[in-house]
Image 1 (spheres, rainbow, N blue to C red):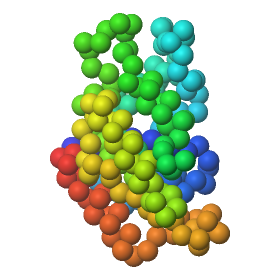
Image 2: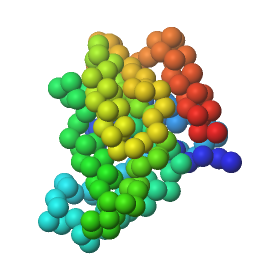
Image 3: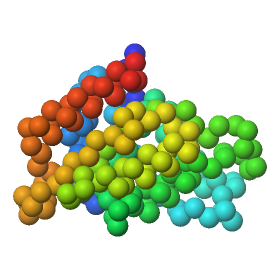
Image 4: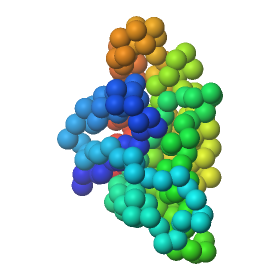
Length: 184
């Protein structure tokens, strides 16, 4: 069975390091899973006044996440946390589909996921830790606790290209392989 992995990237910059990281991970996965990147550009800010009936973009968001076997959430680190854009998407996904129906699981509850992040010296450690806490609260089955981070050096920032060492490349490949085993 080929698993469907949906990548959610916490940056909407076209050439973001985290988008480049997603592309690298998808290439490492190859034909072992079906991969897609979530487009959440049409998702509005969460507003309970406009929550029910759900806006069309939210219905599509929930359907896309529900159809995935697993999520790979990749986050930059902004002020020692994950970006508000990513939090907004996750907040929408944590809400009941039917007004006041807190008994039916959300599309996130029980979903398998892992986390990665590319940032400066911190390797997005603060963001990944806080994201792991949030996902745990949402009932996500998290693989690898806080996942794997990439510490970006000056060479990456100077070229706007994700540059990883051989050791980091090996660590990423091991995380990919272990996550795929977790899904099986």
